[in-house]
Image 1 (tube, helix red, strand yellow):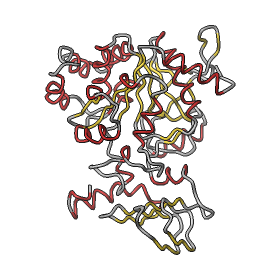
Image 2 (tube, one colour):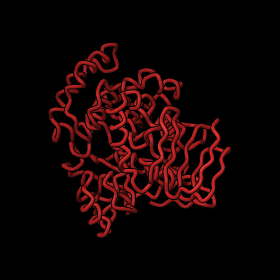
Image 3 (spheres, one colour):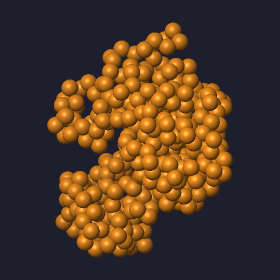
Image 4 (cartoon, helix red, strand yellow):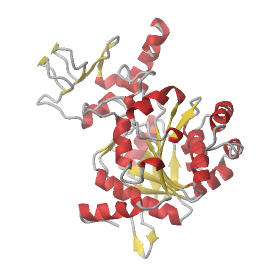
Length: 382
């Protein structure tokens, strides 16, 4: 189902916004270590104005989803150490809608926690799960795809994900292979595809094979499902997680919830939703989505989507003198002046107590470099 105008797009998602059963869970607990030194334990990248537009990635994500459901049906899942950051950046969010992880146990337990909590509020809940730190340039198209997915998941026992055509053999994403033909839905053929295989993050050789075949797409990490469908999937494929979070049913949405989570959440297995459910389930569907998407996982990915000068440099400040410098990303404090000459394809980041100057082509090493700095010079550099 393709809409032909912005008005028809808005009609579709405005119709869905009226459903009292639509909820959004924004996951905002990651550290973003590949954006070191700007992204640090104390303030990860989802809380940073990394695009230089006056809003953090979390704030942009939250505002985007206000087109899907009202504020009181948006939940934020984050680590307990970021509770104040969430409150500062999203003052309208209800305190009860901030779910705090006492430990980092990957995505399956945090999604299970949210599903049981929201499902107790509304057994008919239809839920979008999305990362807090992704860039989406084509928001109308995105909202159309989400509205279509919500409509489908509200009427079918289905687990949906948005998928993206790959542009490189990336080992940081899950991959999806789907049936070529679209499914029939409401007497129409629409762009929802039955998934044949769902593969978690591959090694490089396998990712290159996927790219060359042309039969695979990236999993964007944006999921849509009903609380009932996902609970059934947990019961079938992850009974240990089901048992743990079902034991909290007497406590969710009560003053005792925090104590239950503090005591029991760390006992959950450390496993992704991909491994726990999606690779095993037979009711997984995907919606191919050209939404101007980037997970902004690395400095190079930010450089790829950001505004650049004549020499292909992305620079975040005005007091700068560049000579013989090309293809660089330069991210410095706004009150600093800089003179740079003779760099090609470099990352230059000054975060006050850390200066990083590193070849962009080797940025996959930055995560380990950050660990080395902590081991050699102290936790303040984490």
